[in-house]
Image 1 (tube, rainbow, N blue to C red):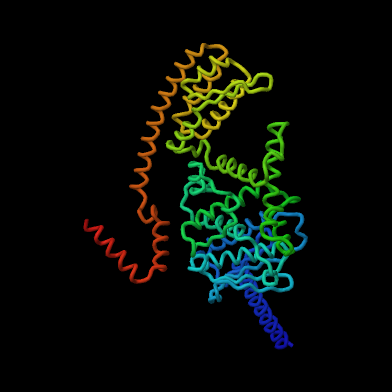
Image 2: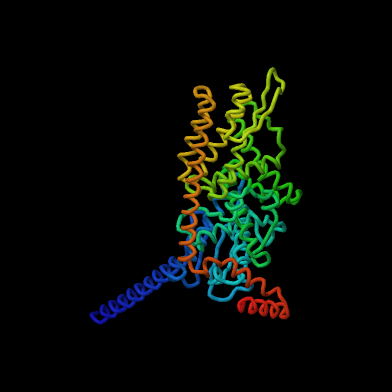
Length: 466
């Protein structure tokens, strides 16, 4: 009896040990699964075949991509969507990305080094395209329609800016677009956005195109809501295949921009006529105003040389005198001879209208000027409002004195800019400073035949000798 009892005890211990070992194995396996699998708030699953700390930034990259795409497609019109599962695998994936669909999921397979691969643009844009379609309720492989390039490049650009930019300030940076704004040379909005470019074929021109796409997405996000989401509508209309790409752009993007433009001008004036401009003119005007407001402001003012050009245009005053609804005269003078217009027309309706327009221009100049100039622009604005109380001769003298001080301030400001630029050129490594130029030169080498390369080498050597 005692031996039988001991035998049962031994069997119990054995079974207990086996159960404990089994539980340890299960727990370790589940722990490993939880460490290598990550769920986002939108339901996307990110799975690494073998996760460790060197893949942490890749995980953050994919999470941000998912969050970005989900925010752009935040629409009540989307009734169905497929769960995206992104697999980062150690084995090589053909073409860098593979998309496999099931009844409920869209599985995206990526190489572990997809973010640094030579074909990363094609890989990541294909991933973005698949996620956009899946989250809008379409299977990427079955969808026989294409999404516009600017939409995909805009998202790709946001990802690149977030994880590869060397900017210190956490802001959306548009150096090319800002340069165009400062020089008053913004291109046609529609052509700039809808002319698709790629980094491999178009080089540095693609960087400017990417800025346009990022800018458009940023602004359209502000104009979207759950009940009116033009990006979701764009995908739905593309799926119907009944409309051209231009018609879809008109029905979605242009529609919300024109709607915003009209509402802005109705708030400013009750006499606003929405038919005074066509949609193309409204969109271009909106593009210019929004770009300047976002990119040129007190925190990022105009360069001195560009401010001087705008101020030169401001200096010209034109007064159209109207009596009883009829034009009785017109006079144009520089700001230093503004008193001559006042002496002729006094404080007439035409003079008041001209002055109000110029004060509005001055407010815009004050908003974008350098700090050293603000005081003198403010003083000049105050002088222009004194025509009712001070003689025109005194106003003329005060204007000249203020303009002379403003000129001195601009010279000082230009010296500060030159000094800062010199510091930047001497502290930044040439490789970083001319990174885009070096990349462009390397890209163009592939397009030159050996004889052309040899000729250019000879020219370069002779130039260096001289």
